[in-house]
Length: 502
Image (tube, rainbow, N blue to C red; front, side, top):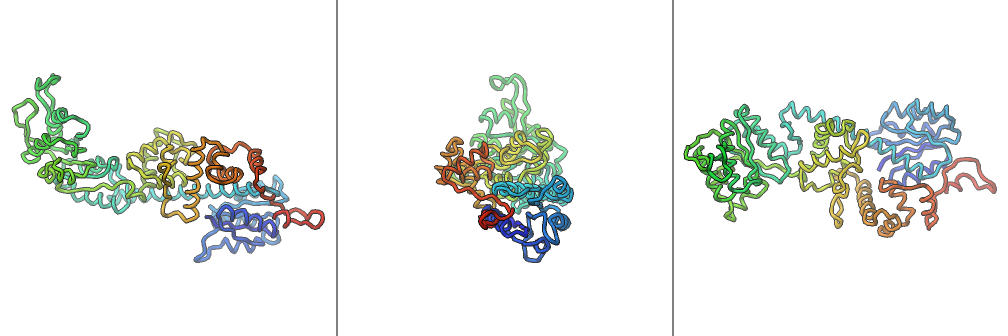
């Protein structure tokens, strides 16, 4: 909900405009003169600021152009729209030169005012989002200077600071680190950060995905093999332990290793030596082992599927990487990071993300965590038009939030009216999709009049509103059209401006 200031010396026009913006869910602040209106623009402790101004042009004393200049001086980001029955091209040009956002000539329909207000507030929110992103970028640079930015690991929440603190403490040592978290949370990035800050940083960092190979292939991958040791072994192959000598070996998805291979791993960790498959030579290595899994290994140990002694060899220092659902406050930072990383090669025109799209990302459940978020941003960059990612550029799975039987909860920092509006948008989008875009069926599913549906579709940018004629036809089907807002002279029989506005 925005706080909108309406300045007009005509009572009928003031009240008509006020009713229109209140129906949109905003707060209308009414002033009968330019001087009175400027008292609401001035900053007062405990009073929320005005976010949009609609002012008449011709008023005694302080006129509309004076209001534009005063508002621009006080708050350059507050849009001002001038309305007048005496508009000329010269006046409109002068108003725009002074900083007016728009110029509207009376009479006009309430729906025009609604569209103008919605667009102005959208632009204001985009500017605020851009400023917020710039501030967050500055904060990230400060984090880097303070040691809280690790390569591609981005985060400022307490959960991520705990991860950073663990990396800082354990990196200089040779202790084995057991990294656990859901798939896509960035476990490999944590392992690489530990290696980069260790005394082995100049040595190799070697990764093995234990869950991607069969037992036989994984054994050969880890320990290597001799020529002729099995069918297809046409030459000697060095294993990953050997390749990681004087460096770090990262065993990803260690929970997928079979019990037989677990025993061989235990020996390497204890003795720091092994033999290649089919070989007799004992090879000694100096390797630091980091491991990671999305499984709960303690449950696997209790079930007898994972060796307890190997678990304790790997689990010297545990490091828990939180899911994205547990650190949603980091989403704006992550999005900014991915845009900066991916946009130059995908869509260089994109510089930021819109407020509505960011809110939708905050409401989504993220089963794939940060990896999924990066994928979503890359897809959105492909379809984005202009310099900002909007909701329409997001993948359908994210735009829809959750399955049909659930609604995506908006971010907790949103106000109650904004939350209700977001949930209304979700319901309308769901009904629209279910009806295949047939508006009469959409209205039936929602239990509202078709004319009301047209307004809401236009408000939320859902589907395509074909023409004003469609809306007029819908209005004829049972809706009462809103009156034109006009402050012209009284009509015959004493029916003045107030009557027509009502």
